[in-house]
Length: 301
Image 1 (cartoon, rainbow, N blue to C red):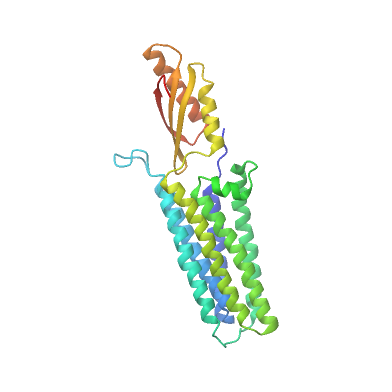
Image 2: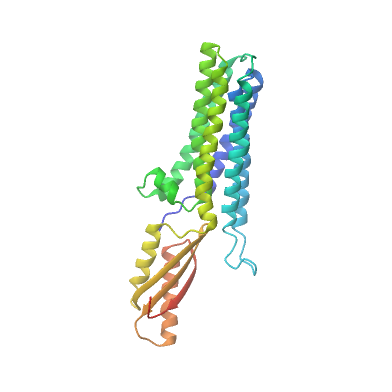
């Protein structure tokens, strides 16, 4: 039976962590007048909004099939995940670059930068907790693959988005911490401005990679290769099946559609229908994500 990650837990971990971090960053940005801190505050609020959109998408994806959407609304999560990637690029990335560029010409010194450093350290702790929650869920389905390979092959859009957001947040917090520390030590405001620009560029890069992966899911992707192979092997071992000619799988959010063309041993029509029903039941038992199975008995490829 294939493992399943609990994406909802990852989203809730991230939402709780980002909301607490956003409030702390806002207070620190007002007190210190740090551009890097303001960029990080905006980033955290954008992430909170993103996670709210993911929750909405996950709820929409659970709607029952109807006449207009006979295979359900599972792909709704792909749409909202793509929207999140666009927001991460625009609200998070572009604003941070703009704020850093603006700060390059500023002469107003940082006020009590030690407060900013404390808040950033607090943020790193909370964001590490969120990242731990996400990684724990990813490890349920990573199956020994590298993190990059899992990111490229995953079919869980919300988990891909949360992983990208958490990674960007941790790196962004580190950039901001280094920028504020360098500004405090040297008194040179350029470090703070460059920190904001670096955070913006980081968010844009992460948003691009997330958008590319989610776009592939939105267009339509099959099950991951190991799952496809396991489904084909499961069908092939059925006593009534002489040969599996073709298997097509397609993801609709967490749900999976399977279409099979197979050659069966010679039998009656009634017996054939019974054997196909048995295979369908076995598939859904072994692979809980399989929601629809369509069989085409045939003799040619």
